[in-house]
Length: 351
Image (cartoon, rainbow, N blue to C red; front, side, top):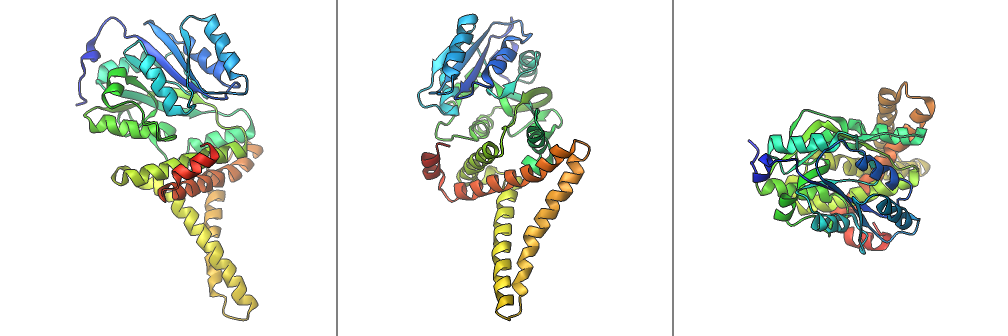
């Protein structure tokens, strides 16, 4: 049974603090905050926006939001990173329940109500549900499809769904503030994947992380191939770092993209050497190396036929591009992160 906490039976309704780190995201933050203010939760609430140094008009936008609703407060996040913003918000929170919100996310109206009910029913330290990726353009729809299929991001329950119960990690998360304080908040040295690492500490200290498909959050994917590649590279980079730091806590699915990248790269190199053999009149047996990238290409085509069929020609065409973009960017990042190059790359790229 999950560990029971004193807060689990408190009454009346628990107060909720929504914490949202924001940096240069003027195109999404208004809708994200609007979805928070539209919640049907009847308990006391506050919205804490941890604002990083932005240059795209986000500062003025969140100031306007705060001026229109007393529940919205803007907190300065000088560092600008996601974990730093989350910790600033958590420390400033006035209520015992902390809801992590992403500026790219849209909460359904019943999100907080279901989450708090689940916290009280299970005694968990953190509850969360599904990242329901939804795109508006053919490219974004292809990205959303990759996010929500096993061939894209590995088939975690918070991507593809699953049964309710204890989990290693969940999307975003609705936390007991006391549990966050117990484990020392988010690790600010981890720029991505900090939620997985924090959930690891929650579980190691006797807490429960609970997944429920009743919670779903609409997520807006990156809108261009370049932004997607940068996001996936950064995510893979820090996942590689986490795999190196905590080798016994990582599932095999995290290693599949880097193995694929290494295999395809070696296959291409060997195949090119085989071409040189043929040109020099030697037996070109190293041409067999081309079989590895050829098999991967067939896998991408088969996945496109299997998952993107019936979703429109443009979306299917983009899926052919999006899938290898995710795999290669994530896999290359993972290899570099695993080789302890995370800090140097992050310092030079801002990731």
